[in-house]
Picture 1 (tube, helix red, strand yellow):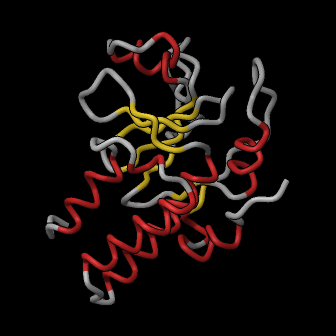
Picture 2 (picture 1 turned 30 degrees about the vertical axis):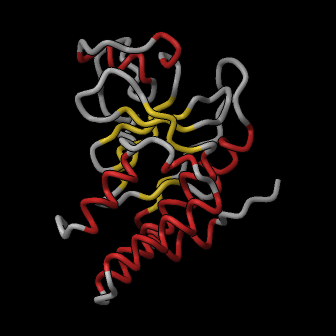
Length: 185
């Protein structure tokens, strides 16, 4: 498989100690092979912006699967949309829980304090591409580049790759860029 996002691009952006790889494993039911390949070869960052999934080795209550949305929502007594019960938890983007529908390969966000989800990325590669581009925005911001220019660049570059992250006004990307442009962080 050919991907635009490479392991070296992720490592260049986040460094060796800030990338978490999913192990290859047999999953129940059909799983998007591109998503599995990217998660195990490119990995996910672990940073202030994107906090990778919880450690599956931590001791949990019997029957609690920390990687499955339905299990987590049941554990905390939160309502869970039926169609999302088997989705995998990837981590948190700012305050939104990020999940992968393993069958379609699409990525969704569950905004904080919301019971519904937002379609956030067409696939895992789009999520990874956006996270790498956002890291570039952070580095350039630290080097005193203009916030508006950085935000516009991010929207243009990511939007050219996949317009989905900006399709919903309430998406975490739109909200975060608005806060960034207004100097809230």
